[in-house]
Image 1: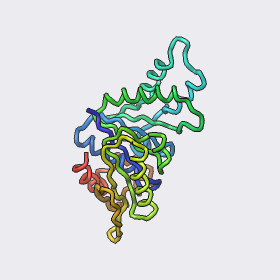
Image 2: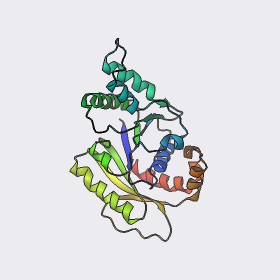
Image 3: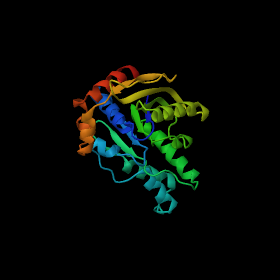
Image 4: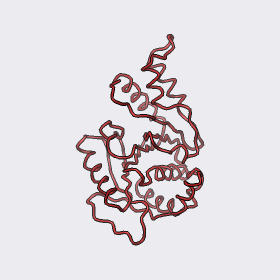
Length: 242
């Protein structure tokens, strides 16, 4: 049975790093196959994973809008082929990049086809790990739906914690199918005070300068995470949570 894990929170709290850590944790635990979905248009997840990609879901949507479909194919057939071509296969995981959001115009038929194929595709994997767009707007587009575990990432700052509180409140209001939601505090310093937030907390990850150094140097985090205290702290959390 496929388990779906999503990571959300405001920008700059380390969502993408946590996603990389979850992927590395599952690979190290010999859990495969894994599908990693980059649902953040501004994310650098592919760089953090050390993966290059040639096409996104947004590209497929644009092609169909422009009627760039061979006459010998139906729309569902074409979407299926292009979707398979968009998957980047790696050792231990596959990556699928969503690309730009849908925009103002409604293309319900196309988007419903895409969601159907994504649902069918996900059945081939033991875990789906989703890096969501920063902030809260995408929740109304149901990017995060049918999720087993939603990790809300927060730093020990008021603005970040307030965002987590709003997201936590929004999930039931939108009637999203999320089995369990928990907070992970990231980039915590020893002298940080973390307020009581009345939301289940999975744990905290202490600040680790190595993660920032690797990121600034353009080194894919997935190659180096095992060397960090970040990964040790995250693994302690994941041992209990997934």
